[in-house]
Image (cartoon, rainbow, N blue to C red; front, top):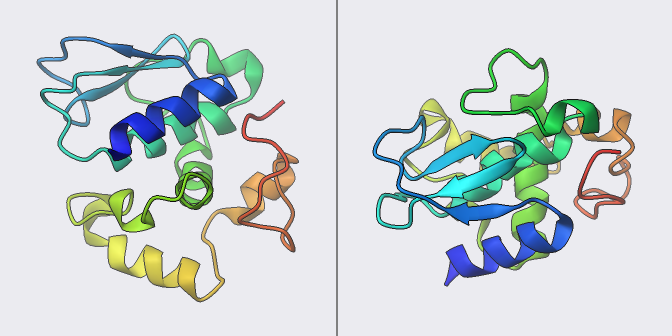
Length: 148
């Protein structure tokens, strides 16, 4: 089950995941709270959303991470860095990246994003490199799953 595999991975790298009742959230069944993830398994539409939302937490500077809640639009770069992070994480835990880049996400750009990764042109990779989390030559292998 992808949800269980994703949750185990996130907890292993230090991103807390808690079950919760989320009648309303930005993404169905997933919300950020105090540097961790809340998951409503009954409302979770796309398990891959867990990896993408965890990517926001993982790439955030440590002094910002614990304060992240709900919508993260006010933190520059987190969206673009979460995209290559979540792709690398999907490969690491051996789930199909199409579960993260599904038809219901990325405003219809999922096929193009997947194509970019498959062609070796990962959007946002420079942000992970600048954060010291990987290198351009070794990606999608990560040096660190959490920004330090």
